Image 1 (cartoon, rainbow, N blue to C red):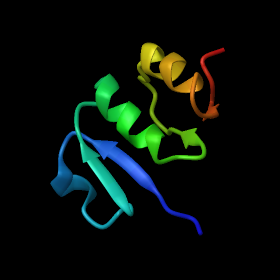
Image 2 (cartoon, one colour; image 1 turned 90 degrees about the horizontal axis):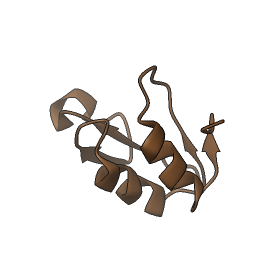
Image 3 (cartoon, rainbow, N blue to C red; image 1 turned 90 degrees about the vertical axis):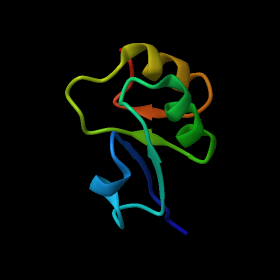
Length: 68
């Protein structure tokens, strides 16, 4: 089964776009951890990624693109 999760600043902006959503700022480490806890892999399509979050997530789940 393929399921998707995502985070965005506003739950209204992402209604119906993913199976699971977390409304939080993009630099919220807690929100990133919540998503990663339910993931086999993390990907992102965002230019201003929080490097600290990527490095933290890489310790528990594969992240693409990675921090290096």
